[in-house]
Length: 109
Image (cartoon, rainbow, N blue to C red; front, side):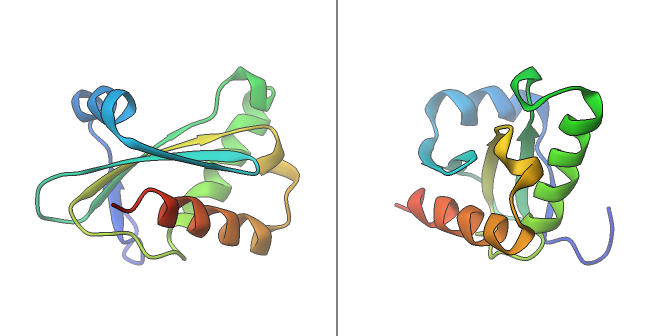
């Protein structure tokens, strides 16, 4: 984990629970699902399926989302699943950060 990141990777056992029962908020190019959990840092899982493109495009989408996540405020102790669409790869980065922040706010209780 790089020192500037306010989150850790979401464990696979928790991933299914968040995906199935979390609060969803979608916006242009992405969907965020969140669920409150234990104390500690925020946990994040990123999904970029085949609809995003080939392996290069999927990895680029995940890298862009990880960087954008380091710039938005995440609630400590909350688990997030971020699902990318093909639009994430070409979207201007500042717009991606804004959309991600809006989607995260939409999952707040």
